[in-house]
Image 1 (cartoon, rainbow, N blue to C red):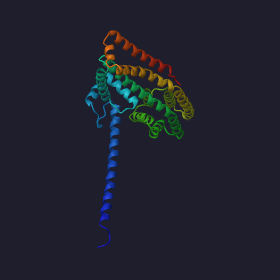
Image 2: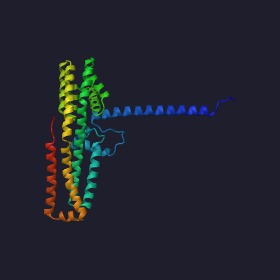
Image 3: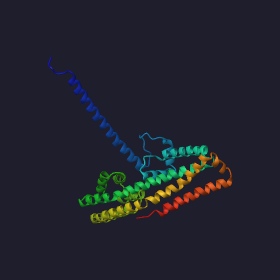
Image 4: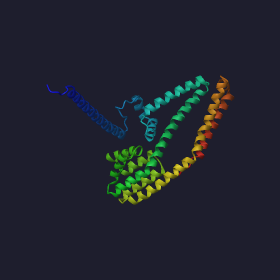
Length: 314
């Protein structure tokens, strides 16, 4: 018998099987991800709910997509980039409304139940608007790089459709995701005008409108867009710096807009903490209810006017 340890072949075979298993799992996962991407793209093209992702409340989602409210929520969610269906959003919103209603009724007074419910609904849609605006801001910050990639690609002699696909692969989200949608639209037969027009509708901004208009006019006229894109890249970079400076200067004002109503709510909770049942007794009369509603309206107007005054379009 030779001096080779019999455990060595067993260890080698084990390592080889482990490596093959890992390679097989990675290949399976990659194929599954590609299949799911194709299914999601086709479902998005046909306006159908995406299956196979472990979605909940599918029956609710299918019912909502047939209504105007469901289609409107679906467009809002698509603009935010959140991986949430209209059915999931609606069910979670209703659950939050019920929970906050019960909590406000139990801890404060019965009068605050409907107010808490309305506040939850407003906060949910305000969050969607904030998420959409945040995505638009991030997309705007990527526009100089997008314009630079398109300029380099067209200068190299590539077609606009190819340049958009290249930009979708090189850029991160949200620009990469949105340009991938544009490339998918072009792949199934949509025109450049339609695909870029839908992009401008999903993420409305002055900078994107200028870029889309430049690309559409160049595509219609058949001329070169290298010079226009070079100039546009420089302009977008300057606007990006200006927007950052304005946002920094107004950060304190924005914080004040949120602190003012929070101080009022905190004072209300502190008063009920010091004198338990004070809010219940106050809201048991019509004048007390009127005073509370007037206070909330004034705080809301203060928040609105501060945000309005601090909003500067650059």
